[in-house]
Length: 473
Image 1 (cartoon, helix red, strand yellow):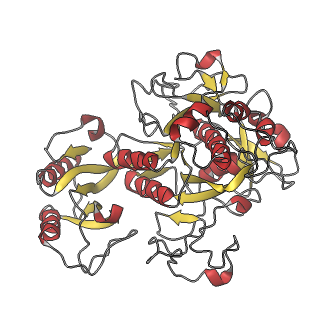
Image 2 (tube, one colour; image 1 turned 180 degrees about the horizontal axis):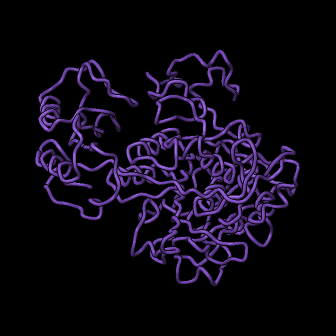
Image 3 (cartoon, one colour; image 1 turned 90 degrees about the horizontal axis):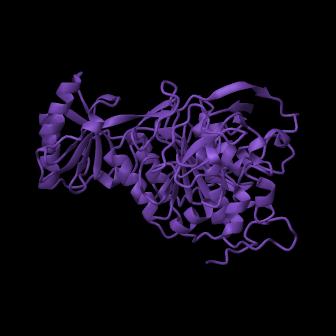
C-alpha cells in the first residue's frame, strides 16, 4: 500500500502482503528523533533541538497512534508502528490521514514483504568430490569461467554486496573472500584481529564519525543491528558461493569471480524480509562502495525500494535481480505481472531468468521481453550451503552468476560505467529458448562478456587481478 501526499492510491500495492500495523513515511525534510526515542537504526540523530517541523511531524504520528521504530536516510524516512492491532482498512485510513499533511509528508507506504526463493534441492555433495568438474554452469560451452579467468581472476577491490539472509563463514569456500571494512581494520592488514573487535563504531581516516554500524567487519545485520551475519536458511550462503567462492584453494567449488570481496548484508532470518530492511541494506551497500548488489528476492513496487535502486545507479552500482519463480503458474511474464526489483526499467538493474544445462528456460522461471535482460544457469547449481555443498535451483541462483561477471569487469576497470557493463553482458550466447522472452535473447557467457569489452589477456595467459586493462570503445 502506498499513498502519495495528495491522498491518491496506488492500487498495485494495496493488496500485497505487508508487516501488520506498520507504515513507512517519507518526510519532505529530515526529522530528528524525539529526545527519549528508542529508534533503532543507523545514523539516528540525537540531542538536536526540535524545530517546528519536527514537532508537527511527531504530533501527526502521535495523533494517529504511531510511534517511531527506525530511521533511514538521515531522518528523511521513518518506519512507524501502531500501538493497536489495525485492520487493513484502518491502516489505509490512517495512512491517508498522515499523507494529507502535504507540507510535512512526501508519501506513506506499507512496510511490504520481501521474499527469498526456497530452492534447496538434491543431496549434499562431498567436499572430496572434484567439485569444479561438476559445476556444469562454469564449463566451456556455457559460462566458460576458465576462459574468463585467462583474462582476469578478479580483484579484492571489486565488492559484491549480497543482500540476503547472511552467510555461513565457516564454509571453507566463503571466509577467504569476505569483504573487510577498511574503517574497522585499524591496522590496515586486511584482516580483523581480536583487538579490533572493540565494540566501537570506528571511523575511516579523515571522517568525523563512523557509519552507525558498530563492528561491521564483513557487513551488517539489519535485523538485529549487529555484526552477526550467520545464515539460518543457507540461501545467502549459496548466493555468495556462486558469485565469489574462493577458487584455487584445493577444496570445494569455484566462484565465478575467483577473487572478490563479498560484503554480507543480512536482511532476512528466514525466507521472508520486509521492504525497510532491504532498502536500508541497499543504502548500506552503496555507502561501502559496492560495485554490484545481488538481489535474489522479489517484492512489490515500493517507493522506498525504487529510490534505493535509483540511488545505487547514481553511484554506479549495478543490481542483479532475480526474475523470480512461480510455482502456481510455471513462470509469468514480468511485463504483465511485474515483480521488483527485476521489473524496474533502470539501466543499473539487470534482471536475470534461469536456464537449464540444455539452454532451456527453467520450468518455473519468470521471463519478459520488455523486462528481463538475459538468462543464466539456475538449475542444479552446485554451491555452498552451510558448511558444505548442495545443489540449488531457481532464478535466485541465476542472478549471482551475473554478479560474478560484473565483479570481473569492475576488476578490470573500476570506472566502467553502467551502460558499458550492460553492453559487455549483452555479449552472451544466443539461445532460441530465450528469444522473444528476454530483451537480449542470450544466456550469460563470462568469457565473451570480457572479450567483447576489448580486454587484453595477461602475458602469462593466466589473469592476475589488476594486470589487464579495459581499453575502451
